[in-house]
Image 1 (cartoon, rainbow, N blue to C red):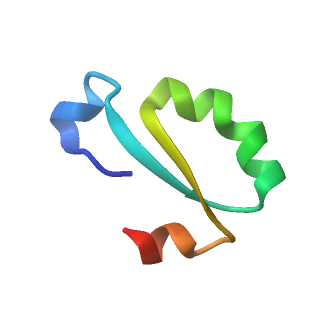
Image 2: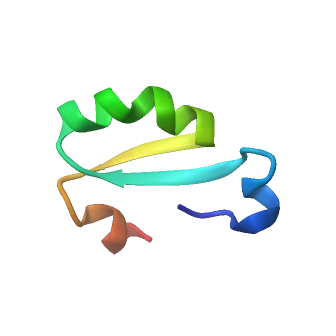
Length: 51
């Protein structure tokens, strides 16, 4: 997650998800409620490397 408290309050955070694609697709509806920018980065651990 990137964006800080001020952006989280408005739902304008960026979410980087490192997980299997089927898991990402299952969680995408929830993630898009939490943040406007949602990116699947690849396998587990890749979001941490990206950030």
